[in-house]
Image (cartoon, rainbow, N blue to C red; front, side, top):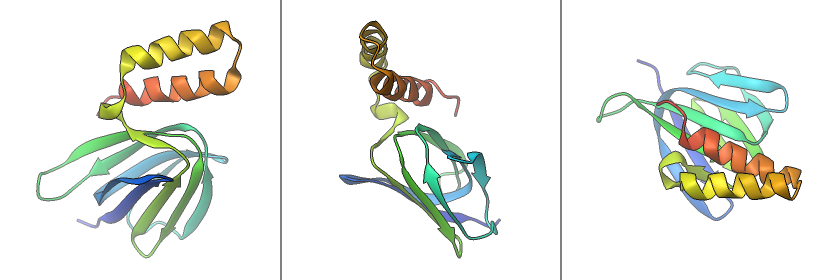
Length: 127
């Protein structure tokens, strides 16, 4: 089976690296799915969950991350997701994100509301 080599990197750390059969991310042009053999691509990432369908020695699975802006680049079987902020779904404290969402709504802070919403969607996404 053909595979992508995926690197998910935030400004402060490498978040995830491995093999995948499919990556779904939100760009300024809309949601995009990237599979092995995709045409070369450079896109701006929008805030949203990124789903990585993993392959490898441990079998198939999924990794979900909350991504808050950045860039996506695909060429020659390698996909790089360079995010301003990114966190894996298992790193997200759901109760804290819910409180942040409530506070952002009460303060009418659209940017904070968007960040909290992305974190909640990533944390509760089906894998």
